[in-house]
Length: 89
Image (tube, rainbow, N blue to C red; front, side, top):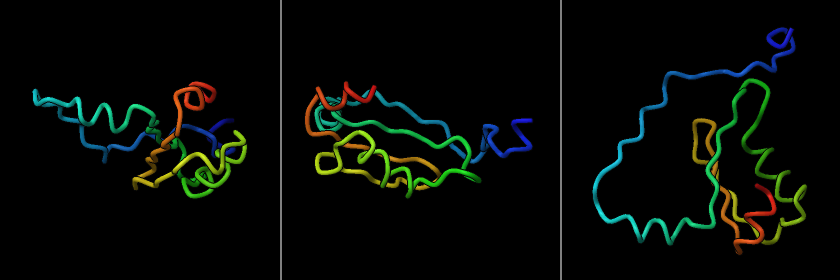
C-alpha cells in the first residue's frame, strides 16, 4: 500500500561512502557545529527546494536559518544558536 501511494523509502545506490581521514577536523567541527545535514528519502514525491522553503517557516525561524541544497536529495541547515538547533531536534 505504501508503494502504491508513492510514500515508500527510495534507497539510492549512487551515494558513495564517506571516507574519514585522521587529519585535525576541529576547524570543521567549529564551523558546522550549528548545522544539520539531511536527505529526503523519497525524491519522487519530496522536493528539497520546497523543504528548504517550508521548514524554516514551519519552525518560525525563516530569518535565522540558512538553507542549502547540496544536490542528490541532500540539504544543509545552518542555525544561529544552539538553542534554535536543539528546538528542532
